[in-house]
Amino acid sequence: MQSALLAVPLAIYAFLLPLHAPVFTANNGGREQLRTDTPAVHATPPLPAPRHTFTVIAHRGYHERVPENTLAACREAIEHGLDYVEVDLRTSKDGRLVIMHDQTVNRTTNGTGLVKELTLRDIRQLDIGGEHRVPVFREVLELCRDRIYIYLDFKDAGVQQTIDEIRAAGMEKQVLVYVNSEAQYSAWRTLAPHIPLMASMPDSVKDVRGLQAFLDQHPVSALDGYFRQYTCSMLEAAAERGVTVWPDIQGPEEGPAHWMEAVTLGLRGLQSDKPATLAEFLKNNGQR
Image 1 (cartoon, helix red, strand yellow):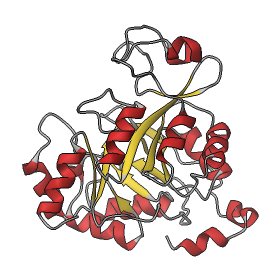
Image 2: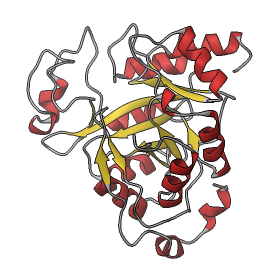
Image 3: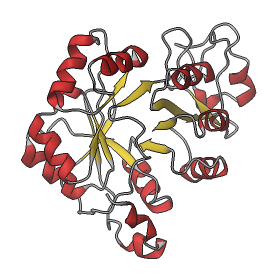
């Protein structure tokens, strides 16, 4: 979508919003997906200005040597010249925005319990490895500003509170928000129509016609999913609509063979668990 859309007054932009928010359905990966039978809207804001010809997204930060979703993982991504750091947003019991992937702290810390049932003080006292602590969102925003873009997986938080913190940090043009539910999608479109959104492509979409029908109905700026969900023709169809496709490639088998497959397919952005190695691979192959 051309940046001229940002000049549309909010009242007019709101008029362009759907009468009914799009409905999400569960997929096998645990994320929810937009349905393909909801009212059409075509206005979408642009993504942050690209820094490389191929975009590399550090999944939960660059965490090969430091814990995931930490300030250290963000610093590692910055130091390696990556394009985006993907982080997961949740809310503590006392209403503070914190970075944590899981609903509980069990896997990544020495504690137990749901994030939403722990105060920020409780969460800050948890051991996640060495000197590292669970960061609050404001710390991530401050660290990343003008250094790396944020791909915000919006797990469980208040939209207005999140917008306020993004705005206060001067990061409104440096964030891409991944939405996980109908309520999130509707709230972001209503409260912050200038912030680009990303959603998963439904598993039911198998070809160009399905992709076009989906994009006719949903004004997202970017799509994700697994990289093998897409064909060359589907990527071309998305590009014609001004929609960027940056799917996931992380997993046990991630490596040069998969990266070359993605490049050959025509993808120009990936989310990775090995982002620095991926970036070096792309550079060596003239793709970055």
